[in-house]
Image (cartoon, rainbow, N blue to C red):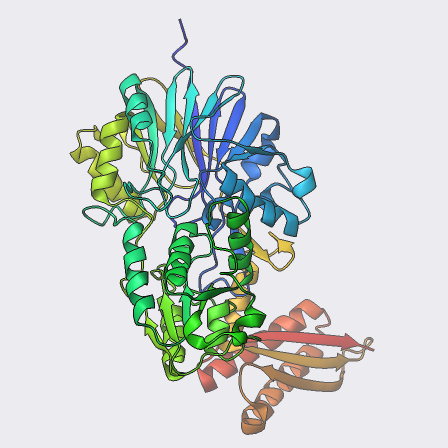
Length: 552
C-alpha cells in the first residue's frame, strides 16, 4: 500500500498574478519537469530593461532532478526565456515541430543550437521518465502546434491546459483533442492547471477563421498599399493575410526581424502555404504598383523600435507611409500598451494613411463557456488557476465553484508557492525563491531594484554633480565647488540658482574644515544634505546629488 505522505509538488516560478513569464515546475519524488519557459516585456517603471525572465534559482539548486522543459506552444511568453535559462540549466527541451522551429532561431542567435538537446514530439506522444510520463495533447490557440500537457504519476494525472481556446473551425483544421480530454477526465484527473486570461469575458471566443472574412473585405476595397501589423507568432493570422493577398493578386513583403524569422520557419516547415512568387523582398516593393502590394509587419503593440513604429515616425530605412496607404492593426493592445498604440495610430493618420484598428482581431484565449467545457470534460479533483493577474485567478476559482467544485479543493496561489497535492488534499507548504530577473543588453540579473530606483529618480528629477578639490593634509578647499546639472535645470537660464547652490556647498565645506572633518563619507553626506534641503525649498524637486571629492 502506498504511503499517504506521497505527494506531487507544483511550484509556479512565473505566470501567476501576471500576464507572461510562464514557467511551472512539477515535482514528484526525485524528478522535476518544467512546463514552459517564457519572458515578459518591461513595464513603464523598468527603465532601460529589455526583457524580464523568471528567477530559476530553485531549479538550478535542484538541477540533478530536472528532466526536461516541456513547451505548450511557441509564443514569447512561453519560450522567450529559453536562451537565458538554458545557459544555467541545459536539459532536454520537448515541443511540437513549429514550436521547436521557432526555438531553433532563438538558440542560433545566442550560439546555443549545437549544445541544446531539442526533442520534437507529436500530439498523443508519451515521454516516459522514471516516475512520471509526460503526454502532449493537441490544443487550439492563436499559434499552430499548440498542446496541453498531461503528466501521469502514480498518484494521478496533473493536467495543464496551456493557453487555449476551443476553436471548431481553425485555419489548419486541427481542432482540440476534446476526446482525449474527456478520456482523461473519465479515468480521473488529480489536479488541473488552467489558463485564466479571458475568464472575465462571458460566452465563447470567436473562431480565428472569422478574421479571414474581414481581411477579404478590407483587401477588396483598398486602392493603395496595405500594411498589416500583427503578432509575428500568429501563423494562422499570417496565413489568412497571405490568402487574401493572393485572392486579389497582391505581392507580399515582410518587415521586422521576428516576423521575417517566423514566416521563414513556418513556410519551411509547411505551416504557411504560399504560392510561388507571392513573397517579394522589401527592397523590391517599388517595382510593383501600390495597389498590388501588401506589407506584413511587426509593431501591433506600438513598440518603439518595431517596424510599424519606425514607419509611422519616418525612421524606417526602406518603407515610408504615404497618402493612400491602408494600415490594418490586427491585434488588441496588451494592457499597458494602449498609449503606445494610440500614439502610432495618430502618427499614421497624420501621414495620410487610412488606419483600421477595430474588429480585425480575435483572442486566442478561452472565454467563460470554453473554460466551463474544459472543467466539465476533465473533471479534476483539485484545481489551480494560472496564467493571469490575481483578479483573473480569483474569478476562475469562483467559476470552478459554480460548477460544483469545493472551495477547499481550489488553490489561488502566487509565484514561488510550493503546492503539495496528495490523493485527498491540496495545500500550500512554504515558498521557494522566485521573482523577476532583468535582462539589460548583455547583462542578465545585474540590474536590480536599487538600480531601477536610481534610474527612476534620474528620469524624474535629474542629477547634480558637485566636484570639489581638497588639500590632503589640511582639508582646505583648493578648487570648486563646481556644479554640473543634467536633467535638473538648464544652467544658462538658472545661473542665480546655481550660484546660490555653490555658496551653500562652500559654506558646508567651510564648516567641515573648521570642525576638522576629513572623512570623505562625512563631507559628502553634509554636501548632499544641505544641497537637498536648499534645492527642494527653491524648486520642490529632489534631483540625485553626486558629490565627487578629489585630493591633491
